[in-house]
Length: 439
Image (cartoon, rainbow, N blue to C red; front, side, top):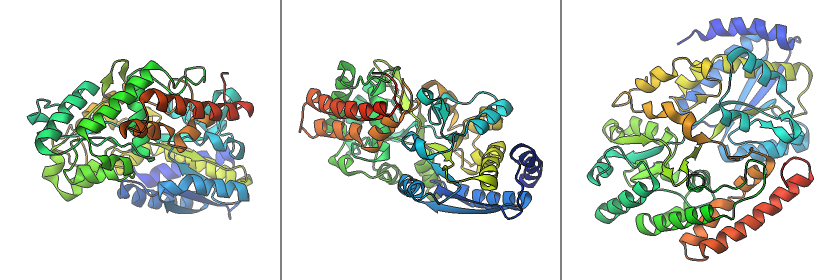
């Protein structure tokens, strides 16, 4: 690994030249989520303290549960006072009026490090207003996590590759062992992601590339019918009451055959039972009739509220750029959870995927993630991640729609039409404010 102190000294000089950090009593504060990989927070807090010492800036860091980030950001914007930098995990486009335009540091990073992953640009930039309302430094792949022994016995030694495989193999495993597939259908993070992945892979989407709502389509209806069948034939009713931790806990306990998640559940299992962890494999996005798509699991997104000014603003911007300069350390200490938006900042990544530095067995367990940019998309795909898309996500409209069909409360046609109507209302509200295109 690179020397943290050496990098800090180099980039503190760069910071003084670019953003003019001047006053010796400058202080910045950060609000971040409590990372799913605890080792990362330990590294980050030490890094922030050393950066502050090297730059003559006081730095404090607060960590909260990820569910508290948006509510805290909203309260601080309303109060006009709070943290200098807030890290959120999904596009904060709906907060755009209260955030600084960060075009300068986005362009500086692109000039230094080259092209960024498209999923990262989508979580930071709003074309209709030509605004870089955020700076996305990392994203998290969302592969399939599967029990190798169970799927091998069912005839799929490399795990499911398609949605047909997931249904047929998952159903066979459930019938013979009682162990279900774990795709959530409740108003929480993992359900929102898994349901969207299926809809995209069947050819449906919330909006088209021009930001017009197209949810009510034959493709979406087919995807919802598939998900309802999967639940009825290969899952239990527990998925209707899941939290974001449920599929992690189920995989760790050996009670689920397949989940769609980041590597965090696996990393937890590694520390508990190495042999059980060796029995977990990873697959890329499952293929449906229209291709193979999955959203990034989360994004690491920095925003700076408009109440931050002067030397505090300059120091906040420099902290963000210097953090990017140290992204090899970010990826390493997150145990390969945080992937870099700017790939050139982590030249070691391919080597780590081929030989996991954190002791996976086999060492190349994560090699499947080399293809992540072929199948990982953003929440607004195939359009942009605009404020309307962010609100649809926050309201859990998609998993609620799917759950109604799986529970037999509505037909797929009725549930999709009802959801489409609500999505249209949200888009029209934001379009009237000039923050959504189409129409």
